[in-house]
Image 1 (cartoon, rainbow, N blue to C red):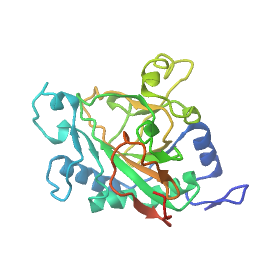
Image 2 (image 1 turned 90 degrees about the vertical axis):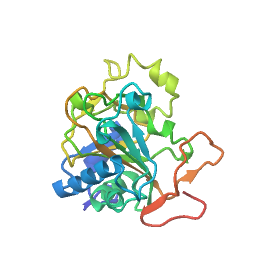
Image 3 (image 1 turned 30 degrees about the horizontal axis):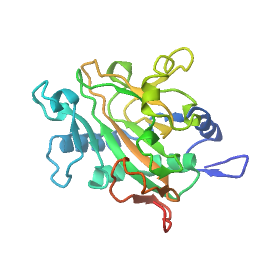
Image 4 (image 1 turned 180 degrees about the vertical axis):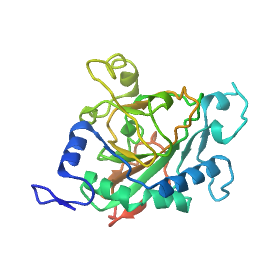
Length: 268
């Protein structure tokens, strides 16, 4: 453990790492998970994608070319774009979402041990057809959760690099507040990732994890390689957060599950 200058106890990170996250809006922790931990998630992800996990319902999205009938599905696993909301249905995925190695980092970044899981998404990005994900902020979708101060842990299952679509972040953009999608895709399209607001690509080895703030602008490129690029993103919030039920166009989530610590009446 680390004791900060303010007397705060950090479970997993150094004070410098926390400062870098606060400044940049993202942080990489290399080799956080062991090969067996990664393999467990890898095998279960493929089983769910193949439709072989009967206890998991819904939550499977195919790549656009298959959804729109531009190509026929051959290998179903390699046709899947995304799995979502599987942690609350599957023991292996829940064990990953609650893995102390990950949650200790989340606790350090959120400044609390009272943590709930907002949701999870496993991005499959298959070789050759895995589409890009344009610049976006997660809280632009999760707009019913306040404060907009969630943290995602993106675990590399496969080697992730520019060739197969690793994540890219624009440092410091978590301090811009929430921007409307047309602004991200229009006004800032030429600046984001360019000289004015340069992006940082984050290649990851399997088992390494990148953590990012829910307002940090990020993207991933298309997978133009012959390699897979699977990454499992688990999204966390303080148990003291609240949900604005008047917001009707946010994702419909299952009941939020406690990851660590206490829950609070009237909060998420």
